[in-house]
Length: 362
Image (cartoon, rainbow, N blue to C red):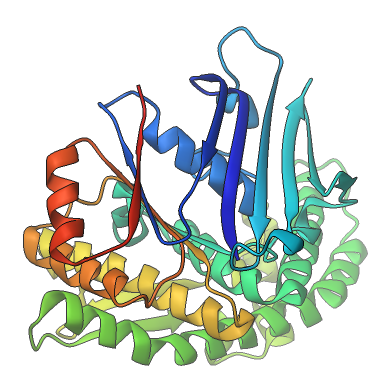
């Protein structure tokens, strides 16, 4: 699947803009602040129904406008007879997604149909920030290839929110209806077990590809690993809920469940966050994204779009050459790259003999 055309209206700094793309590599060039990253974010909207950078859609509105519209024409290998127009429209606080003018009943119905991988300077946050960001990162990967997982994740979170409301009410002495907590515990259990098993199997399925890419990018003999940590590893879910009852009532929220899971990133048997250099962390984060690409490709039998935002300023020359060598071998499908230096990117693409199109953003 490739994106052939993109149309923007009142999206961030774009009043009205049209773009056509190459099926291989598209180089988006311009000065800092010109809107290169915003263009990539518009493509991200067409895949995930949301921005890569913010959870609030109103931040994507052009100043003093009350709506934005993004339209993209997707084709199967540029086959003119296989066109699908995907539209994302945000107006008066409401967002809608449409496929060939037919609106989805739920935004989640669109997730996974047009898979995409975004590589950004912010990816190191996955390593250095809290567990919630890591859970979200891996949940997005699994959800792109498994719509049932996304459905169960949404159901789990809805029940968890309701349970936390009751716990907070009991803590504030608004009522003492503990029987309602047991109802929520019974409802949430099958979702938690399903999510735990999916996360567990997912980590096992990407580890080999992840380690392969890390060694390819870093070109050294360091050992790396990803360890899935969950309270369910050694505890039956219902027993864990029972053991945390007193703590839940004292704190006003749920202390046991898959919402407490974490993923530990390891280098040479030590935590990457504390013992990894900047170069090692960059290689680790990029290898994660490339393993994510392969995982989705295998599951969907279709190459996701690959968006590379500002990578030339964030990676050293050796890692850039290793990455572009993969692109040149056509391992990836359609690729979008942003950069500020036209001479630099042309030299790199010429060096690796990569078919491409230059798009200049003024």
